[in-house]
Image 1: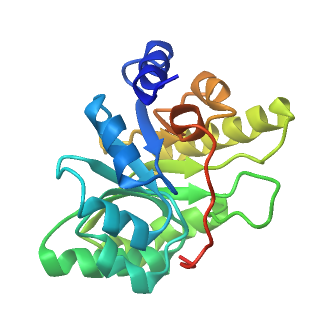
Image 2: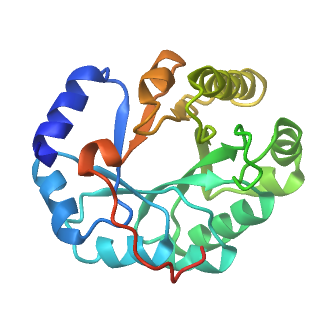
Image 3: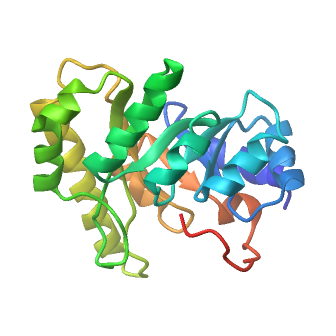
Length: 229
């Protein structure tokens, strides 16, 4: 089945208010361009050097989402190309994004990434860390970042009940943050969760963004890792 057909079928299943992020990591420019020519505008990458390289070769109206662990020393290179940074998991990182954004007069949209999975290897805030962050004076001084929601990755497991619990946890976090800290901020509206193997559950739990790769592009051909961000 073609990429266009895969996208068409997905968009028939997904409510129009839910944004589909095509996770294009490891995909060559030619394949991404095929998806773009089928009307897909939102793409996600998890390595800075890959996103920057692809953005320079592809149409300017593509909306790039950064999904991976982000080192502070890579922020400057990323910012000119990214629409949304989905993986903010520390005050230090947010401070750096704000600092570099201020240099060019932009406001950068970000999501707080929460650790909801069983795996300790995944990154993300917990509830107490997030509360401390939004209460901090440093955060309140930031004028060049905007928190527009939350992101999380469920455990890599075949136990869909476990996945459902984890997505439900993230949904609760989203609404608790909204009620307590962002109640008067209409831009705080994004709940990014769900990948190719579990997106129907994410939709049930209220996702507004799905991050799908394999179901669009097919199984990935992994290449040797050279970038550690």
